[in-house]
Image (cartoon, rainbow, N blue to C red; front, side, top):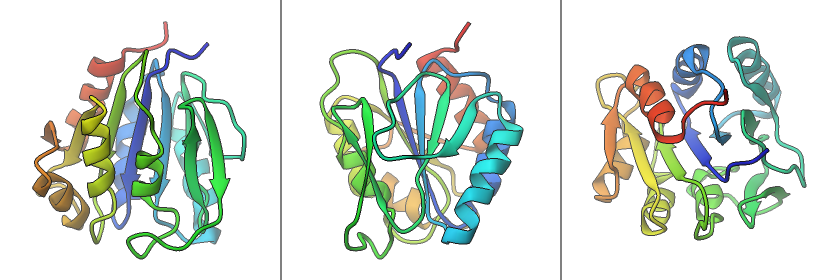
Length: 190
């Protein structure tokens, strides 16, 4: 069953370590989780497999047309953008780099549409550049909840800093508090 709750997590340099930390202690969330990690093609599958081994949730590389389900984590493959169709299905699409990267966090976050049910949560973790800043603004404008990793725990504070500079970040948190906040916001599958 799908509650309509969606969490999108964007990360880059330093992100896999934070993702491992967060997902190793997360229960099965009452949400579909989408991860957009800037990674090379030979690493994306390994990162997804590692997260799957650590997590109580099912983590896999996203496939075109996949339908979102609670408790599942959809990892964006390298070198292709990931969009949502009506907040229910995933679409993999070719395209130019955005913010010098593909997949782009902004492309995924900006594909969300106004929710009628469920919560929309956007998270920006450690990374170089400003990918995710425009997406955070979009999510906030839709009435979603936004989170950025704090400077102290970020390997590279570029992306979280740029997201924070938009004025559209609700919470600036270290990884262990991000995990708790996600549980608080969407609940768990019982």
